[in-house]
Length: 392
Ligand SMILES: *Cc1c(COP(=O)(O)O)cnc(C)c1O
Image (tube, rainbow, N blue to C red; front, side, top):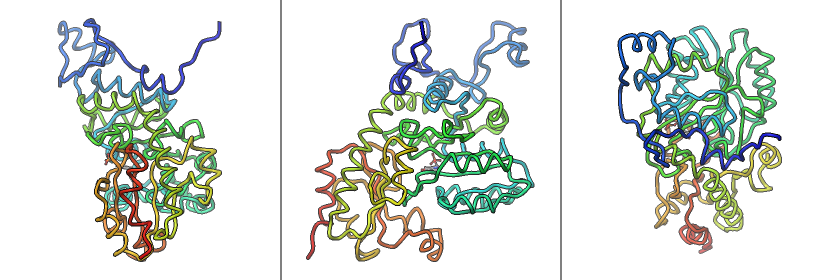
C-alpha cells in the first residue's frame, strides 16, 4: 500500500506535535531554562553528545523543537533553526554561512533593516555586499566575484510587490558556487515554497504571518541540515534563540496559517481590484492583478498574490497622509501579517532613511501607500478608504 502523504493544511495542524504523558491535546509550553539529569553520567553523556536530549534552552527546548519541526514540514525543509526575531534569523544565516573576506549579492529591494545589517554592521566585520536589481538576473550574474558565498533575496518585494524568478537566481548562484537564501516572510510556505524552486535557505520573520495576530517576535532559518549546522552553532553560542513562550504562540499560529493566508489573499485581491477603479488612485501594485508586470511569473511561483497591496494616491504626500488620517478602522502602523489591516506611508516611515533619489530610483513615490490586508470584511475595508472614491 502506498504511503498516504498529508496535505499542507494538515501538516500545519498536526506536524511536529509531541505530547507528554499527561495527554494534553494542545502542545505544552516548556518554560524552563535548564533540564535535569538522572545522574552525573547522564549529564556527561548529554554534554558529550553521546546521548540525545535537552540540556539548556539556549541549545534546545521541546516547545521550540515542535515549532521548528512543524515549520520545517510546511517548507519541505530537512532542518529548521528558530530565532528570537526575523533580523536575528538573517544575522544567524549570514554568520553561519559567511566569513570575513566573503561577498554577498543582495537585492536592493529587501527589508530596510536587512539593508542596514548588510551595509552598516556586517561590512564592519569584513563582509562586502553588492546590491542589485531584484528583477534583472543579468545584474546578479555580473555582481558575482570569486569570493561570493551568498545570494540574498526577498520576493515579492516590499512595498512594490516586485517578483523575481527564484529558479533562475538559484541557477546563477549555484554556477557561482554560492547559496541562495530567500526571505519568505510575505508569502509563507502556504503560498510559496522557495526550497522546492531551487533555493538553499529560507529565512522568516515569524513576527508576521506565522504569528498572524501581531503578538510576538520570532524568526527561523530553514534548509539542509548540513548547510545549517554552522547556523545552529552560531545560535547556540551567541544566543539569539526563540523563547518557549513565543514558540508556543507560533505553533498555534501555524495551525491556521493556510486558512488565514487564503482569506488574506482573497481580501487583498478584491481590495486591489477595487482600488484600480477609484478616481483618486494613480496605480496599484499587487501580483494578483493582471496589470502587474510579473503577474504570470508570480502566479507560477506563488499560490496567490499574497496580502500586501500598495498604490499611488494622486496628489503626492499630502493626499497619502490625508487618506491615512481619514481611516477610522485600519491600524496606522508599519507592521504586517496581522488579522488587523495596517496602513503605512513608506516614504516617511519604513523607507525614510533611504535618500530621496534612491527612493525615486526604486519607484517609491511620495504618494505611495501600503496596506497589509487583514481579515476584516472587504466592504468595511472599502468603506474605510472611501475618500479614494470622491472626486470633489
Ligand atoms: C519584518 C521583516 C523582517 C524582520 O523581522 P523582525 O521579526 O521584525 O526582526 C525581515 N524581513 C521581512 C521581509 C520583514 O517583513
